[in-house]
Image 1: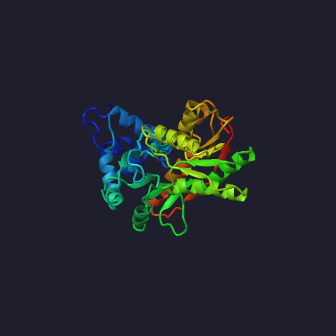
Image 2: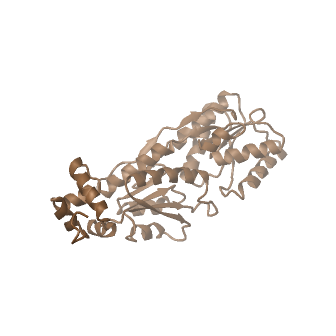
Image 3: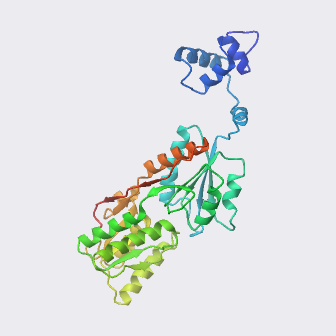
Length: 340
């Protein structure tokens, strides 16, 4: 050991042995680029030799930071939806990667809103440096109210005129229009929208389909409610399809509100003896990895979740530093495969 009589237990001890200031030791062990490589290497070697580690909790207390970001998924619109939903898992994975790269931990919450204070309880808890929300659910008013006084809050979702909260997401209305225009261009005329429209994102996708059909001189699409809970989705889709068939309302195209709804719809169509896309063309929305592996492979509207996660985290850390970073509306993309 460099000084066998006195093992280094504090920053000052390491600084004394290295011949530098305690601040230089702190910056070197935090990986700051302001410390030159030779000095950093000497400090790291001394720290390893003395089995020295910085007390991260003390450092964060001094900086008034927790090193934790709250990630919450509000489910006011569908209380039975699960965290294991593939869309949630995909976006959450990208967010966690970005936060880990910034040396922050994640505190994950599934929120069933029973009152209007659920978000305030998170922001006032003192447990997080900022909050990321995956989805707006039916909680726009609550989110906007908190955003008026709490800056480090970024939401995956849509942006409306006059909105206070910072949102990152895709242009959902354009995505719905693109799906509709593609089906119409392939000769489909009797098109349904499979999915509920109680959330802003899904309502905008439905509105985009309505725009495309109106522009083509077609009647508005049938709108078919479907729960997002996986244990309910197949039966509700089957009931919707059976009802339309029983009423003599034959459809030749379906714009699904999400990839998961689209995949379940294709399964139910196949079970009832109808082919995709021969009898009914189907499009999804999200472009999850499952879309590429489906049989037939799913034509869908792509949301770039990786880019969205990067934008959310970048905006959040700007806001943690007190800068009002703007939101971002990303363009959707039509991914052509076999189902439409």
